[in-house]
Amino acid sequence: MSLAVGKLTRNKPSTADAADLLAWYDRNRRVLPWRARPGVAPDPYRVWLSEIMLQQTTVKAVAPYYAKFLARWPTVQTLGRASLDDVMRAWAGLGYYARARNLHACARAVVGRHGGKFPHDVAALRALPGIGDYTAAAVAAIAFDAACVPVDGNVERVVARLYAVQRELPAAKADIKRLAAALLPPRRSGDFAQALMDLGATLCSPKRPACALCPWNEACLANARGEQEAFPRKAPKREGRLRLGAAYVALRADGRVLLRRRPEKGLLGGMTEVPGSAWAHDFDLARAPRYAPRLAAKLKWRRLPGVVRHVFTHFPLELAVFAAQVRSATPAPKGARWVKLADLPGEALPNVMRKVLSHALDKGRAS
Image 1 (cartoon, helix red, strand yellow):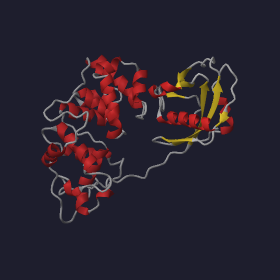
Image 2 (cartoon, rainbow, N blue to C red):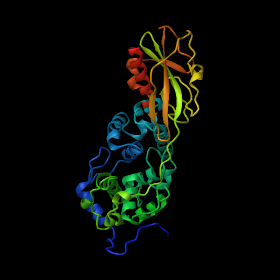
Image 3 (tube, one colour):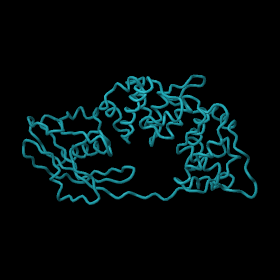
Image 4 (tube, one colour):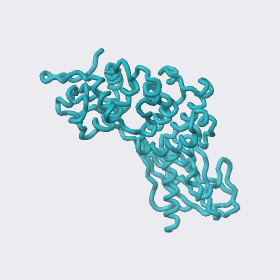
């Protein structure tokens, strides 16, 4: 195995011992809503639900959504029986909406293929919708104590510093996974996985890590060099090109707004939106009127001041917002519906659409 791992000519650190990390974890483990208490068997459903929600999202942001989902759908069977629309509405605001679609599909698959019980091994978990390598390993290790090490961003940082891995991410991912797997103790795989996660989340932070408190500080190559913040090495990010588009907010006189559902596939698939154009680098604002919804009454659309800005993972977006007033009796066009403004909090609106509606309501009142 050829790894780009740092070498020291003197003061070589000691070998990292899993027992030291587990002892630290037993004293300092985080109390999390989805984490089983010491001595209590983990619930695979809760482990899986939390891991899906925590992808690309912070613990603080996830906690209220997790509690809401668990209260409404306490088992994988109840979640599997839910409608996708209800799941998308409950997920609205948490972002990365493909996770919600996959969550629903996975719940149905667990019920349909496995009788409502999550499989124990990584390969069977990996075959379920929306479960990748990391999530499969996390559920297998934490819920079933399987001998594997899930590697998320926190674990990558810990291991990259521990061994001073010189190769840049994402190219270094395979090396880091092998190094992490070599640390696995013969027992307590689930606790070891959570200990690594906690170490990265609390002490081995991206900036100003608390190395003096770390159970592996004497074994850490980066710490020995005084270069903790230099790891993990990362390739420069490529910023996505700006995309532009138009959004149309039709407000009916009886306090309703026109909404429609986005296609199932693609960005924000299955979520609710106001009618609008496609988002493109070369969007021509002069052609924006062609994307206005066609209603029974002829509308006078007016461009509102300013734009709505939103940043997705791969690109920034700017939307020009148009608004129009509609008579109370106006029917919705095919594929759309009128929704009371008071009911908007319960709709599956992604954050960018909530920004559009807020912009339209604020600017509309001001103009």
